[in-house]
Image 1 (cartoon, protein in one colour):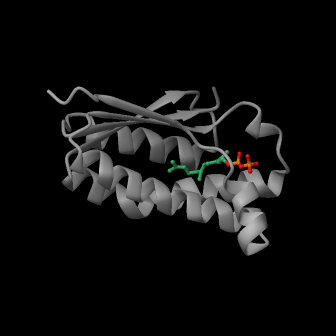
Image 2 (cartoon, protein in one colour):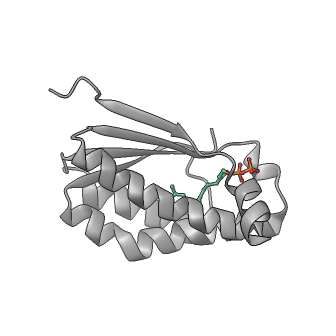
Length: 130
Ligand code: FPP
């Protein structure tokens, strides 16, 4: 077994990075999601079994509504566009935290978890609202 079994990342600094280099916090969030994709590839390459992403805290909920909406749209689109591919790659998605978002997002999260439940290559724990 790989001695490094679990990598956990607190997603932070995306907004500041976006403001500094792209003059937009949201551009930083988009870039952060691209980095998540790269990290997923690297975790698989390095045979790491668990990747925990602390993506959204209860504190983050207090941000301007526009930014919160943007973040949840990003997550929705990520699930809509990427879940089949993650499933094909034998990746399991697990939500840790609270699933009390819009019914559209709750359904997407539940469907994505159910679809990938038996996958074994990598488990991604997505920490939301904890
Ligand atoms: C940290 O940067 C990032 C967040 C709080 C949100 C990350 C969430 C997403 C990109 C949604 C989709 C997530 C996944 C993993 C599919 P920050 O805004 O705290 O940056 P700052 O510290 O510069 O303010």
